[in-house]
Image (cartoon, rainbow, N blue to C red):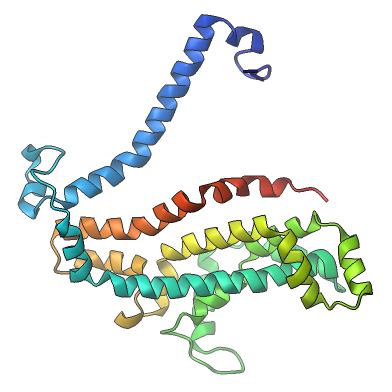
Length: 295
């Protein structure tokens, strides 16, 4: 194994010595174990504490582990809190966000990268500048817009449309798509136009197949973020029939459920993100290299 450590505290020659090698791997192991403990310990604590009853939780002398683990309590909490309804609402919201992000943000990135209409540089500068605007400064205007949509005078409150439309205009994703499309040869687009292909056909038939990594990463991050979203659904939707998972978890603190039920309920909110990362960790971790694509 070769060590490229000439720019660090230890050089490649130092690391070959037993004492430095031992020091390096000891520090690495301690930091890794500490990071894992910080990340995993709260989840394990919530899981184990959820199997305690309320009296056992408030009794500090009971220790870290519950007296017994009844796995049937999980299904009891699931049915009692009707999490299946909140999961369904959240999946609908997340699916709409992914579709709108893929299509609209992808098309916007393609236009800025390959079509380049008149004023595209100004458009890109404006988009980039808007990313510097604090989110709190946009809250009231966005709320008023969806309460009475300009010209159409449509009230979009109590629906998922505001979140879907906001996902379609996510500036960061537009810039991400644009930068990735810049790395694809323009000659392919020009050849397709010579053959009579429209811009839409080029986007769906050429750009998407050549840009699978960026679509995977943006789709996964959009879906994962939507599964835990809270602020906008809480602000725009008050109907219990359209409550999403993040909002319901927040409302548990004012519910009549005991503390052990609430803790197990937190696990249901964590579960989607854990499953998504476990299934698609290679594609998610591979997303860190997307910014390095060169044209």
